Image 1: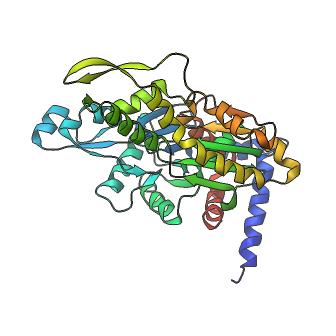
Image 2: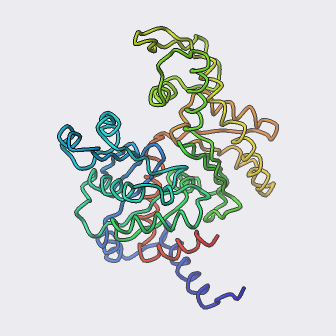
Length: 377
């Protein structure tokens, strides 16, 4: 394949300028810096299979469950009083609505039903939550799964640009690393609802070899837990929404000292159920795949840097709050040396905050170059 040397030279020059801008010792002209921040309104967005998050440059932030609902008929319109409903409100009024969960494995479902319309509505709703829906200067950095396909990214870009002036897509674990300022010799494990994304940071924009997407995450745990509970308690009235709440409240990969006993309905009446084994076994489902991919990423480091990388494994995403997960990963990787797993302080907003930070650090005029590089890598 013929290399366009002129294009490569231009990109190299511009990226060299970016490095100077990112360097804290670089004394950029104050007027130029002010012009950069005033020319656009920046937001960081994390579109998740389960929840979608936004944080704006003025500090406003919000999240919503990634579900959109439209009234099913004229009665639904009267009951709801709105043309479209989002998140928890949509779930609570699901009997009156046609619901759409438009994101699967962290990306838009391709050509299914009203998914494209739902994502456009969802992005506009997120912008409204931070007071940016009426602005025409919004620029957004949006997180996507580490190994999202070029086609998936193209679809998301097309939808997002209907709502947003400029868009840059970055991998979700990279945005976590950016927020945590762990850009060299670290490994991010971002466990969401649809995917588990891993990224080995080596002091540069991560390429395909250093990123992994596992299509087994929170939703997989929910499905297994629901099946296990119905097998043990076939007469119990349990739904996927109930199971999700149980996982979020009691989730653990270590057998707890006291049994996990909850009340669920049987023929409408509340009864006590011991769900300890089902919780532990379902939450542990994701661990073997994570360990397998972590081993590959660790081995991929230069031996001089392996120890540093193993002491900087970062857990992020909603599932990172599962009790004992950090300890279990340390135990399972102990043969490689001294492993330290850290959990991000804010499991909900870390990815969006990292995306916003990157957007602030890199002038919008350079976004296209970075986007082209991430797509071609």
